[in-house]
Amino acid sequence: MVRVRGRFGNPGARSRQDEDQQVQRARLEELRRGAAEGASRRLLIATLRVRVPPAIWTGPFSLRHPDVRLEALNRTEVAPELSVSDYWVSGTPPGRWAQEILGFPDVVRVESLAEVGEGCLYRIKYRNPPVIAVYRRLTLPMQFPLRIQAGFLTWEVVARLPEFRAIVDYGKRASSSLEILSIRRGPLRSHIPVLTESQHALLAEAMAAGYFAVPRSINLTGLARRLGRSKSAVSEGIAIIEKKLIESALTAGSLLP
Image (cartoon, rainbow, N blue to C red; front, side, top):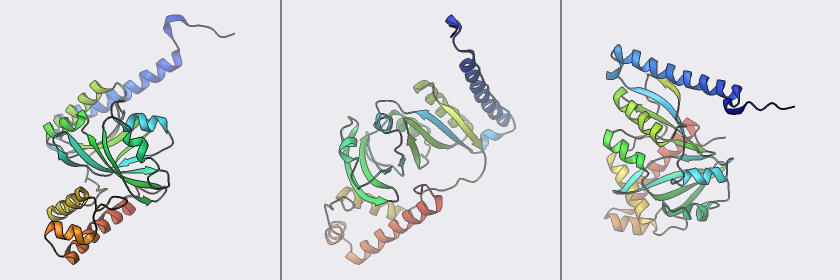
């Protein structure tokens, strides 16, 4: 016989929820103690996890395919309300997910780039989610990769204590599912290599021209003519950028099973 416990619900589930809340309170208390010791003048490196809102394409897409892994590798702002990011999405062949992703209302364009490991790279142009405005207001850099699976986003926040609290407060208002997985102090590990300003500019120009599209919208000769540079200089510049990205991905292990 199963006993119904009425309005008091399942005591086991309630106990687990209480334990989770105690862990969150303990982590925030650790931050408060650190602030009293001057930690507010130092950087905190925290890993957060939250359910992706349904208005952002990665949320419903990853819920449809809970076994599929997504990693946002970068972000380039191309207009006040629009960004372009490279995503690694598990599953082959190349372009397998392109049409489905393009069907979400906040997605503007999808390009299939290449097969990498057990997945493929996609370049996706999309309308900025509200959290971008929060990072912009706090003048915080966004750390990559951002990992999404089964409707949840896991990402790293690197900030001073006041800005970190602002991110956490925003996350809690957006979703009650926000969790602080870890907090530490130490050197920032780099997942994606630091590109020089000229390399960033070349990458942005090549992306905008469709050089990395599949099929390509412009060849190397056309890109060099568009940039007013020699073909060999553009070729060498792109090769260096690609080498940095590949070496960084292999070192971090972010794209490996």
